[in-house]
Image 1 (cartoon, rainbow, N blue to C red):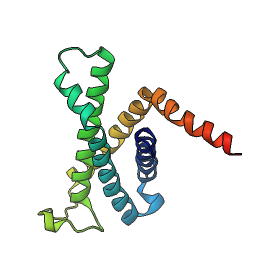
Image 2: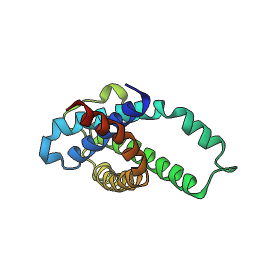
Image 3: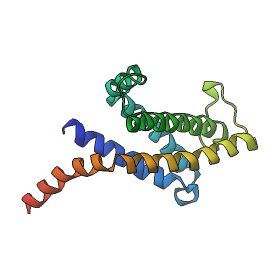
Image 4: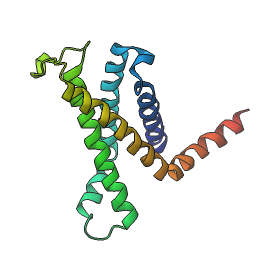
Length: 153
């Protein structure tokens, strides 16, 4: 599998998983929490795969980047901060996974729950904008797959 196909599959897994866990009642609390951690792991893989681009953009942010690329970079940074907030607050309000080995004690504090919920909705909105801004790439990545499927029938 080439890099673009792998990135597409990874992005689709993240997007579909995010849709599924936006309403915890659909899958239940335990699945919601585990899928949230899986999304965190997939996000790390996503960052590792795109690390060279991230590094290049960061080093050139104030130099030769277009306005659109700077906006995209800032959006991606907000999404990253959002996911980190969601994961950390989720660990503090977790009802089924014990994170005491990380020094995190379960708390039912409204602050953590409010942070988790509000950041989740905001990050979901930012991810939607991110997908929209990169939709041309999605279409270009899907096109060869669609063409290959047509040829096999």
